[in-house]
Length: 155
Image (tube, rainbow, N blue to C red; front, side):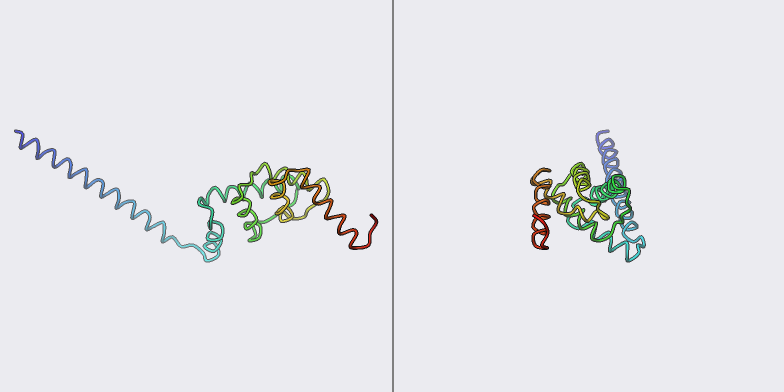
């Protein structure tokens, strides 16, 4: 009887191994079919550009979408996911800039200018992150005064 039981156990074990092989074969098949889906050259390039250095492309894509949405909501101006825009978002993403900080930067910039494009925020956001709002605004006031002097304006 013990031989019969051990044979039955061996058969169960081999069935489990077969099931495991089947599952891994199914995963390979799924991965293979996913990899072979046709993708246009443009979207492949876009994907490569967006996913570089992010570690997690889906979180970066959500981040860029949120920045774009907030820009349009706060300014009422349309913007597109152009290569420079995505590069800027990638820069912010790698510097761990929060979406809330971008909102603060938009509000800060709107106190002294009416930007037409989110690209205007590239360095403002980083300055705000590193130095805080007063320092950032002071820097821009200082640059404005320097330009005014260079151009022969009033002091």
